[in-house]
Image (tube, rainbow, N blue to C red; front, side, top):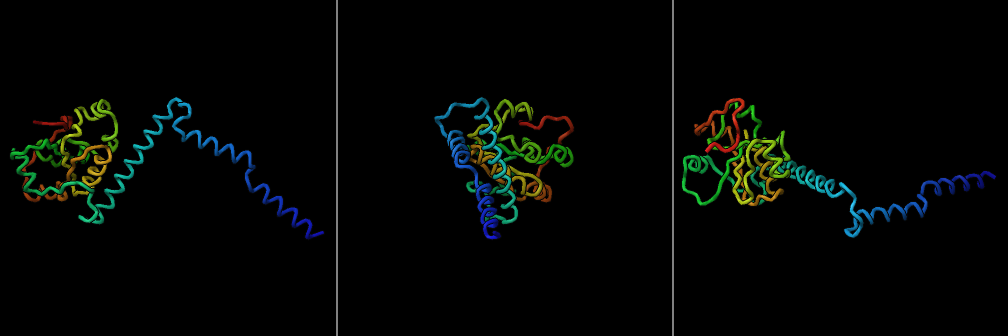
Length: 210
């Protein structure tokens, strides 16, 4: 009698633990339909998928930047040019260059107001506005008050100590900017070596100044 009860209980548990074949098949059918390119379009689904892909890209870029900051030069963003103080100083002074180079300060606006910035740099704060490279051109201009650099421009990123600059280079790469670069020493190095400074007041536009 005891053996019969145990067998019945075990069989019942196994039966209830497994989903019904019909339900499992239905779930598989729904998943297949959702991922099929030939399935009917659901309003808003395309936008959701696009935003999801952008969020994944942004997360991957920030993660890459974090790894780079701890790994040093070995973990550099693939294809990102490393700029030196002397190269940037020459660029700021108007050195001849056939490239369209945009210097991008990715610190927060208050930081720029406190310390100033490299002359001619634009401000795209990567921490508070990390979606800047993935939104539309119109949305970018609404956010920052100036036009976003075109994808054929070379973006040269710096921050305070190089960490956020590396993250920004990774984000821009993922968003379609092929020519990116970083100033590893960033503001700390620029200030220590007496590089020229452009002062920024509260309320000033932080787009192109030249």
